[in-house]
Image 1 (tube, helix red, strand yellow):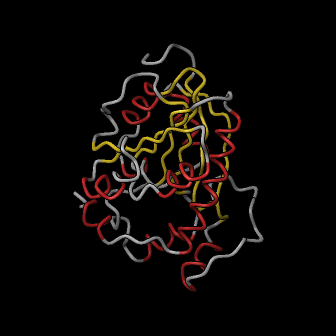
Image 2 (cartoon, helix red, strand yellow):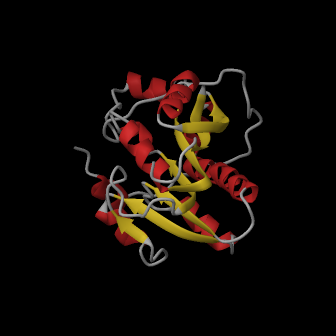
Length: 230
Protein backbone atom coordinates (compact mmCIF):
# COMPACT_ATOMS: atom_id res chain seq x y z
CA UNK A 1 0.00 0.00 0.00
CA UNK A 2 1.29 3.47 -0.90
CA UNK A 3 2.44 5.56 2.08
CA UNK A 4 0.59 8.86 1.73
CA UNK A 5 2.06 10.17 4.99
CA UNK A 6 5.51 10.08 3.40
CA UNK A 7 4.18 11.72 0.25
CA UNK A 8 2.62 14.68 2.08
CA UNK A 9 5.67 15.21 4.31
CA UNK A 10 7.78 16.20 1.33
CA UNK A 11 5.19 17.55 -1.06
CA UNK A 12 5.53 20.99 -2.60
CA UNK A 13 3.29 22.08 -5.45
CA UNK A 14 5.02 22.78 -8.76
CA UNK A 15 4.01 25.75 -10.90
CA UNK A 16 2.10 23.37 -13.18
CA UNK A 17 0.16 22.02 -10.20
CA UNK A 18 -0.47 25.57 -9.01
CA UNK A 19 -1.93 26.44 -12.40
CA UNK A 20 -4.28 23.45 -12.19
CA UNK A 21 -5.27 24.50 -8.67
CA UNK A 22 -6.21 27.97 -9.91
CA UNK A 23 -8.26 26.50 -12.76
CA UNK A 24 -10.09 24.28 -10.28
CA UNK A 25 -10.70 27.34 -8.11
CA UNK A 26 -12.57 28.98 -10.98
CA UNK A 27 -14.81 25.92 -11.28
CA UNK A 28 -15.42 25.77 -7.53
CA UNK A 29 -16.41 29.42 -7.32
CA UNK A 30 -18.73 29.03 -10.29
CA UNK A 31 -20.35 26.06 -8.55
CA UNK A 32 -20.81 28.02 -5.33
CA UNK A 33 -22.18 31.06 -7.13
CA UNK A 34 -24.81 28.88 -8.80
CA UNK A 35 -26.11 27.61 -5.44
CA UNK A 36 -28.79 29.54 -3.50
CA UNK A 37 -27.46 32.52 -1.48
CA UNK A 38 -26.52 32.01 2.15
CA UNK A 39 -24.00 30.07 4.25
CA UNK A 40 -22.63 26.90 2.67
CA UNK A 41 -20.77 23.87 3.99
CA UNK A 42 -17.93 22.80 1.70
CA UNK A 43 -16.03 19.51 2.04
CA UNK A 44 -12.73 18.69 0.32
CA UNK A 45 -12.27 14.91 0.29
CA UNK A 46 -8.73 13.57 0.07
CA UNK A 47 -7.67 17.08 0.97
CA UNK A 48 -3.89 16.56 1.00
CA UNK A 49 -2.44 20.05 1.43
CA UNK A 50 -5.95 21.53 0.99
CA UNK A 51 -4.73 24.27 -1.35
CA UNK A 52 -8.06 24.75 -3.06
CA UNK A 53 -9.83 24.84 0.26
CA UNK A 54 -7.40 27.53 1.41
CA UNK A 55 -8.31 29.70 -1.55
CA UNK A 56 -12.01 29.36 -0.84
CA UNK A 57 -11.59 30.14 2.85
CA UNK A 58 -9.44 33.18 2.06
CA UNK A 59 -11.71 34.67 -0.59
CA UNK A 60 -15.25 33.78 0.44
CA UNK A 61 -17.28 34.70 3.50
CA UNK A 62 -20.21 32.41 2.73
CA UNK A 63 -18.45 29.05 3.23
CA UNK A 64 -17.54 26.88 6.20
CA UNK A 65 -14.72 24.57 5.13
CA UNK A 66 -14.33 20.91 6.09
CA UNK A 67 -11.50 18.56 5.10
CA UNK A 68 -11.24 14.77 5.11
CA UNK A 69 -8.18 12.61 4.47
CA UNK A 70 -6.92 9.19 5.58
CA UNK A 71 -3.37 10.52 5.98
CA UNK A 72 -2.49 11.67 9.48
CA UNK A 73 0.31 13.79 8.02
CA UNK A 74 -2.10 15.61 5.69
CA UNK A 75 -4.60 16.32 8.47
CA UNK A 76 -1.84 17.45 10.86
CA UNK A 77 -0.58 19.92 8.26
CA UNK A 78 -3.98 21.55 7.64
CA UNK A 79 -5.61 21.31 11.08
CA UNK A 80 -4.40 24.72 12.24
CA UNK A 81 -6.13 26.41 9.31
CA UNK A 82 -9.14 24.10 9.22
CA UNK A 83 -10.45 23.08 12.65
CA UNK A 84 -13.03 20.93 10.82
CA UNK A 85 -10.31 18.76 9.25
CA UNK A 86 -10.99 15.09 10.04
CA UNK A 87 -8.88 11.94 9.73
CA UNK A 88 -11.12 9.28 8.23
CA UNK A 89 -12.22 6.95 5.46
CA UNK A 90 -14.04 8.58 2.57
CA UNK A 91 -16.08 5.42 2.03
CA UNK A 92 -17.33 5.49 5.64
CA UNK A 93 -17.06 9.12 6.69
CA UNK A 94 -17.94 10.48 10.14
CA UNK A 95 -20.26 13.20 8.82
CA UNK A 96 -24.04 13.19 9.06
CA UNK A 97 -26.23 12.73 6.01
CA UNK A 98 -27.17 15.79 3.99
CA UNK A 99 -24.54 18.07 5.52
CA UNK A 100 -22.77 19.58 2.52
CA UNK A 101 -23.71 22.06 -0.18
CA UNK A 102 -20.54 21.32 -2.15
CA UNK A 103 -18.21 18.32 -2.06
CA UNK A 104 -14.96 18.53 -3.98
CA UNK A 105 -12.15 16.10 -4.78
CA UNK A 106 -9.17 16.10 -7.14
CA UNK A 107 -6.62 13.34 -7.54
CA UNK A 108 -8.62 10.98 -5.35
CA UNK A 109 -11.17 8.77 -7.08
CA UNK A 110 -8.66 7.26 -9.51
CA UNK A 111 -6.93 5.46 -6.63
CA UNK A 112 -9.92 3.22 -5.87
CA UNK A 113 -10.25 -0.15 -7.65
CA UNK A 114 -14.01 0.27 -7.09
CA UNK A 115 -15.26 3.86 -7.04
CA UNK A 116 -18.88 3.05 -6.20
CA UNK A 117 -18.58 2.95 -2.37
CA UNK A 118 -16.93 6.39 -2.48
CA UNK A 119 -19.56 7.89 -4.78
CA UNK A 120 -22.42 6.43 -2.77
CA UNK A 121 -20.98 7.83 0.46
CA UNK A 122 -20.58 11.28 -1.09
CA UNK A 123 -24.15 11.07 -2.33
CA UNK A 124 -25.25 10.43 1.25
CA UNK A 125 -23.43 13.55 2.45
CA UNK A 126 -24.94 15.93 -0.11
CA UNK A 127 -27.79 18.23 0.83
CA UNK A 128 -30.87 18.34 -1.37
CA UNK A 129 -29.72 20.52 -4.25
CA UNK A 130 -26.05 20.16 -3.25
CA UNK A 131 -23.39 19.39 -5.85
CA UNK A 132 -20.16 17.43 -6.13
CA UNK A 133 -17.20 18.41 -8.29
CA UNK A 134 -14.82 15.54 -9.04
CA UNK A 135 -11.56 15.93 -11.00
CA UNK A 136 -9.82 12.81 -12.33
CA UNK A 137 -7.12 11.99 -14.94
CA UNK A 138 -8.12 11.80 -18.58
CA UNK A 139 -7.30 8.68 -20.57
CA UNK A 140 -5.64 10.07 -23.70
CA UNK A 141 -2.97 12.50 -22.47
CA UNK A 142 0.79 12.93 -22.39
CA UNK A 143 0.69 12.30 -18.64
CA UNK A 144 -0.84 8.89 -19.22
CA UNK A 145 1.76 8.17 -21.91
CA UNK A 146 4.51 9.16 -19.48
CA UNK A 147 3.13 6.72 -16.92
CA UNK A 148 3.05 3.90 -19.43
CA UNK A 149 6.50 4.58 -20.89
CA UNK A 150 8.28 4.95 -17.57
CA UNK A 151 6.30 2.33 -15.64
CA UNK A 152 5.01 4.96 -13.24
CA UNK A 153 1.45 3.65 -13.02
CA UNK A 154 2.01 2.90 -9.34
CA UNK A 155 3.90 6.07 -8.50
CA UNK A 156 1.00 7.30 -6.38
CA UNK A 157 -0.42 3.91 -5.54
CA UNK A 158 -3.07 2.24 -7.69
CA UNK A 159 -4.21 4.78 -10.28
CA UNK A 160 -6.51 4.66 -13.27
CA UNK A 161 -7.59 7.09 -15.96
CA UNK A 162 -11.06 7.82 -17.32
CA UNK A 163 -13.05 8.47 -20.46
CA UNK A 164 -16.12 10.64 -20.87
CA UNK A 165 -18.36 7.64 -21.48
CA UNK A 166 -17.00 5.73 -18.52
CA UNK A 167 -17.57 8.64 -16.17
CA UNK A 168 -21.12 9.22 -17.39
CA UNK A 169 -21.95 5.55 -16.79
CA UNK A 170 -20.27 5.51 -13.38
CA UNK A 171 -22.11 8.57 -12.09
CA UNK A 172 -25.40 7.45 -13.60
CA UNK A 173 -25.30 4.02 -11.98
CA UNK A 174 -24.53 5.50 -8.53
CA UNK A 175 -27.53 7.81 -8.44
CA UNK A 176 -26.20 11.10 -9.80
CA UNK A 177 -27.37 13.54 -12.42
CA UNK A 178 -24.41 15.03 -14.30
CA UNK A 179 -24.86 18.79 -14.61
CA UNK A 180 -21.63 19.68 -16.38
CA UNK A 181 -18.61 17.95 -17.85
CA UNK A 182 -15.44 19.83 -18.68
CA UNK A 183 -11.69 19.35 -18.91
CA UNK A 184 -8.49 21.12 -17.91
CA UNK A 185 -5.38 21.27 -20.12
CA UNK A 186 -6.02 19.58 -23.50
CA UNK A 187 -3.76 16.56 -24.01
CA UNK A 188 -1.68 17.81 -20.99
CA UNK A 189 0.75 19.31 -23.54
CA UNK A 190 0.71 22.76 -21.93
CA UNK A 191 1.01 21.34 -18.42
CA UNK A 192 4.00 19.27 -19.56
CA UNK A 193 5.78 22.44 -20.73
CA UNK A 194 5.03 24.12 -17.39
CA UNK A 195 6.35 21.09 -15.52
CA UNK A 196 9.54 20.75 -17.56
CA UNK A 197 10.43 24.46 -17.49
CA UNK A 198 9.05 25.17 -14.00
CA UNK A 199 6.91 28.06 -15.14
CA UNK A 200 3.26 28.98 -15.36
CA UNK A 201 1.32 30.66 -18.15
CA UNK A 202 -2.18 31.06 -19.49
CA UNK A 203 -2.48 28.30 -22.11
CA UNK A 204 -3.68 29.37 -25.57
CA UNK A 205 -5.45 26.02 -26.11
CA UNK A 206 -8.29 25.48 -23.65
CA UNK A 207 -10.87 23.25 -25.33
CA UNK A 208 -10.85 20.46 -27.89
CA UNK A 209 -13.57 18.18 -29.31
CA UNK A 210 -12.02 15.06 -27.76
CA UNK A 211 -13.85 14.62 -24.46
CA UNK A 212 -11.34 12.22 -22.88
CA UNK A 213 -8.10 14.00 -23.81
CA UNK A 214 -7.58 16.44 -20.95
CA UNK A 215 -5.10 16.26 -18.07
CA UNK A 216 -8.13 16.38 -15.78
CA UNK A 217 -11.73 15.52 -16.52
CA UNK A 218 -14.10 17.44 -14.23
CA UNK A 219 -17.61 16.20 -13.48
CA UNK A 220 -20.17 18.37 -11.70
CA UNK A 221 -23.09 16.28 -10.46
CA UNK A 222 -25.94 16.27 -7.96
CA UNK A 223 -27.82 13.52 -6.19
CA UNK A 224 -30.63 12.19 -8.39
CA UNK A 225 -33.94 11.62 -6.61
CA UNK A 226 -34.54 10.56 -3.01
CA UNK A 227 -33.74 12.32 0.23
CA UNK A 228 -30.25 12.66 1.67
CA UNK A 229 -28.94 9.38 2.95
CA UNK A 230 -30.96 7.25 0.51
